[in-house]
Length: 540
Image (cartoon, rainbow, N blue to C red; front, side):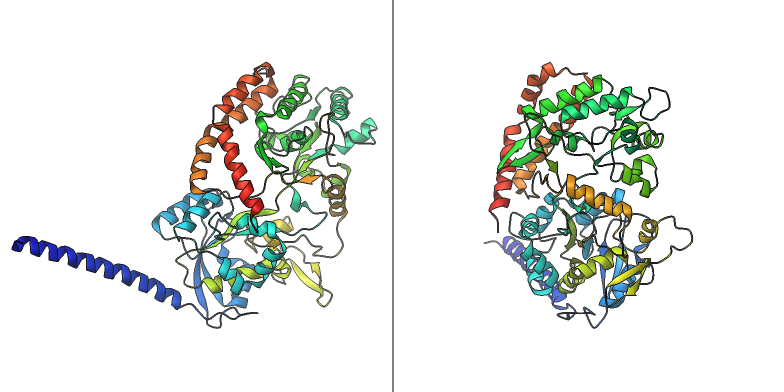
């Protein structure tokens, strides 16, 4: 072996040894960092005796700096855990989060992202890359409230456990509470109570035929009493809010993938969907559905509502559209689920009661045990109320601490509503703040409107509610295939719905529409979702 080659070989070996040592050093340093975790108290507060500081990345809504929020300041005092907050605007949060992942500077905790920003695919991807820390063992050992919740709610555990058996992110969980809005998948449809009174309507429609007849009366009988034919019987913006309620009349729970008795289907190619389109086209042609449905904005919709020109309309609460005082909105009844001759059982699509992607611990976090204990408090009823309403002295005071009753404080000058003020006190506003959400009677007796909402839910939603499809995870390969299919599929279906309803595309072209969707590999799309559902259903 010549001398030059020996020298080259020696140099290569030395470099390899140095690289190995460097790699080992990195591992040692990382393990040493983890070994430097602060000692965590097993229960109660403070969580750690010696104060620690972590970094948190979260979407900001721009109302108040998180470091100034009284809830977070009070909780820092309770726990001995301080945070450096990185809160880019919520509209730009996913971009900033992706950049943080790419640079490796993602902070110790990702908070409040939600499924739209920390998607299920991202959970799986970054979890399998060890960027997100598996949480199940931390929950078992350091999070009694979460442990109890997952034991009592197997639906929650199944819905946050990925295909590799790990939990990489915690959810927002609505408590199973009767008579609350927690089950709503979207805002309901509401009737204009003034119009019902004007026309002497005593009973709401319960079939599509009865609904059609009432819309005709709204159009023809001048219920707003101004002597002009300016009434709009039914209104929406691009059908995005009323669609679920009207599709349900034809036996469908979702505009897309849904499950029925363990079988998955894609509703926009089903015969029932054609029946829905036919019905909506009839309403459109007869000007019972607002001609501007597919072109107007939310602001235009609300302007029509405030002008008393709408008979049936969607919103979270009716007074958001009508502009009435809250106490007057009890006269606007909630839509009763409709049926048809072919679909005789009322259905209301409801939420799973969860939002995933709300809290993750990253590989950079030197104190994962303290971090899981920090979030665990908010999964108790007491902690959930604290996160939502803030500490004593701002929104509320104790009326009788032993009885657990509170009284509402007057708002400081400059605030028009308690929600405006609350948004300055807590991060639980406008984002997926991880917690157990319990709608409770916080300040004593409920208002007349709150009692009205509870009654409407009890009579018109609770008996008929069905979850269209559970929260599932896909494998990496399945996700890639679904992404490829969905790009064109969703855009095409949305465009064609508008064309069919407005008559731009005649329903005689239905078969061509279905064939086009089949060519988009819809069978594979259904097959993947069926496999994901089966995994979810069979999991513990």
